[in-house]
Image 1 (tube, rainbow, N blue to C red):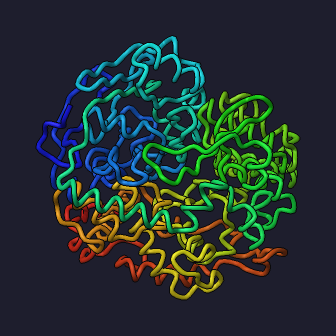
Image 2: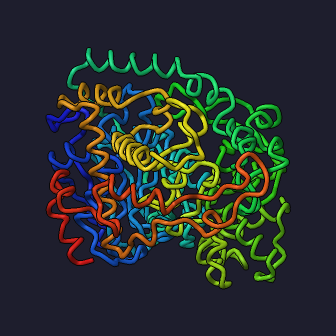
Length: 606
């Protein structure tokens, strides 16, 4: 079945679901919005800016939960098997987009929609069943309380054997601020607690089965662009060898040797037992095979088995968060905790970082409960307690910042804008540190992955300790990654592809001219709009910072010893390059150039 909108690449339709009144409507996508924001993260930001009133509580009936695909989703474009969810985060209070792979995204696209806008709140648990043109809001009372695996299996049996499911587990139902949305059982739209937003709306799952195809404007040109991209991916040592062979955990030994593998709540940058949770050790002890997302030639996913239980992962960020961050080197325990996170719907990064924070609080005698670094079983047990808000899990379920603040030590939360930072100590990479501080969604490595040039030498190795010139590079990477997230493709593709690759894929798919430069401008537009939304929510330059530990306390051992972050020097240069004023607000001239003139009202009110 073909799309009937006359559009190419895009499907041209948006599904709006009002759970309060059980009403479903279909509207035409705004062509200008698609041209200027593309899809995915960009389209979601534009919708949220238009429809969400300032100061709306994330759990309010007024908050929106937006599932988005992009014009390349479900095509032959490499790594196009993705979707994202956009909302206001209950963890950070910022605009938030959470990305996920697997096969749910293409199936959603095949139903004929570029986005689903979920609003309101159901009076009782429901799930959304989209079967091409048939859209139903279905009673989910019997599913409430089930884990994500049982939920997925039940829904596939009751709908269609080829349906794909994105759902929440008990963590989302219990409004855990670090709850994830899980699709395909093992893939997570994990960061920011958007699973809790879904839970607040009493929406247990979204189930999709689509039979439409994505129309391509210029098939011959598009196929040529795909082949060119595939060749580039096949020639790159990271996308062709490292990631397929060892998965993302190939980075464990690399970052540890550089002294920037965060250990014991970022108190140290070198973990003596890192080998025990490395990609090499995963391959030796628990690996059963490779796993690829829909249409992905890289196949970085890991199928694993631990104590007779099968699953996927753990990934690099997870072996760090549930491992070194908590002083744990027991790979089996880390893998079990990872499986539990997937089953109960918990973000692994925030869970592990929050547990590590609790361990330091106890170490400093601020937290009475016995939670000690190195206690592998405690990590496994606490993940489950977080999901059910059981005992101390109720406090950890609020995330590390609220936990540390409760005990009078917010500086012990290793977070930016209340989002827990991932597995790279910023003292070891100045550009990456600036990217953390200025990320619109908080402490995140995937707003601008400066680990590429600063650590991996992609596209070229630069001095990771120098702060000069990093503001320019961070700005470029933030704009590029906003573009990739809007297309929507996997950011791992950026190891091998450049803006011209992306531009050729998009232009030939949609039949509109896009150059690499124009695509970067789209990313800049998205980044500035997100900034305006955050300003509207009360965020300011004071939030573009890092925990004091990284600014004042040098690492004492490892390859980054003696280093702190020169944030102040980089930040003022970053604002200047961005075209923002000294307070970090986009200047009117910048907004005019990006076509965001109407957003100037945000600046006047704040």
